[in-house]
Amino acid sequence: MKHLLSIVSIVLFVVGAALAEDKPAQKRFVASIDKDGYQRVEMTAGEYYFDPAVVVVKVNVPVELTIKKTGGITPHNIVIKAPEADVDFKVDLSSEPQKISFMATKAGSYAFECTNKFLFFKSHKERGMHGVLEVVE
Image 1 (spheres, rainbow, N blue to C red):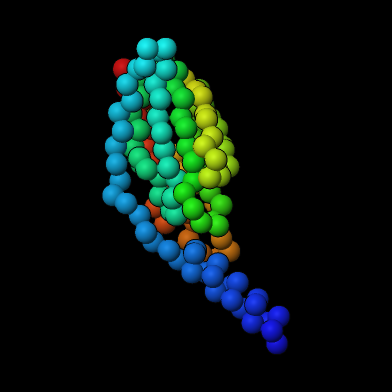
Image 2 (cartoon, one colour):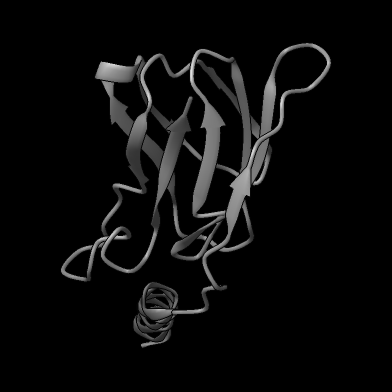
């Protein structure tokens, strides 16, 4: 009986975490070019959001994206599939900052998202964990 209560408690905790909806307003960040020629962007992945959710970078200038996950047990990732702009990656996130370097070679708007989904619940993207990389001239 005690074992069953432990299992039920864990399931309820996971379901509660999956249903959490605490998201900040979507922010826009315009990267500037540092002295070393890189555009640096710092991003946070929270429970079903990216902050900032809109990132603007210049075409043909290297980007260093540093991203970390806030607290919580829900696993998240960041995925951008834009091979036409030479931006194509999938990175699993943790509380330790991860650095992702790339250089977009074509102007345009490219979606990024968390591709995770828990059981029969909405996907992380459907719950708001997505954004846009805007590459400008």
